[in-house]
Image (cartoon, rainbow, N blue to C red):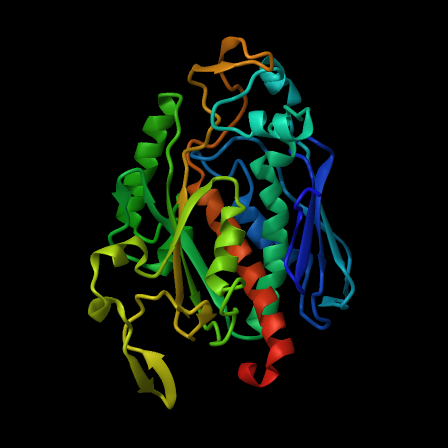
Length: 359
């Protein structure tokens, strides 16, 4: 078992390695007659691909998707959708110096302990390149969610100690750090470049907002919607924490301040505030789902670090190659994708349980 499949009805299975011939995904459970073209998938892959700006890795991958099955004349058929993205700019020789060395912050040691060997070329299966497959699946999920008018918006909220002071969705794709505050974006870019010049890297926070999610998604015990979203998002290698709504600030509030009063608006029940972040008792309540994830500093840095080799002998490691000084800009579409896949799956589950609730 390698844990490469996610979902109950909308199920995706990813395959491939960072430095292999290619990577891909098979998605089962996609309903028929969902509009889908390679262009729909490509637009999200372009947002995640490497080499897109001066603050991302300069590995040059076009990440061109090939839809192999499950789509005919621009519509899904109901059959499994197979998609392939070929690797074209891998440089395995960049990793030859650390093939017997455990890189700090990476999965080298744990992967070795689990399987008894490891693919040292860029991390192999543990590489962040695997997220290309998730973004491809997420693009399919977004097309399905469109039928329910569900929209997912993610952006870089902070990098290091620099935080967006305003939230303007129109600004997100207008700067290379994908921040909703243009002034803060400029400061973030300058800081990322400064850190990169010091052969180091930096982390940040990505925030996501889901608009139009119907009430009733999720279950009250183990399959809470927030639990499933946390599971999905924490499966992204670089994520180190997650919070919903008010999050950890709720620990500083009283219940009278944190509880969201119910009101009737436009003939429907809503909440006056949204401290819960759109999920109550593990079930969506119809308000915006608001969450934030902590993105760690990328582990691959050119600064010399102390470590040991596979024999436990002390040594040092300098990671060569082309790496991101900050992952936030490229993590944004990955976060959107995992939310989309989770919600698509949850919608299909809810449609099976109580289809009337989705009308």
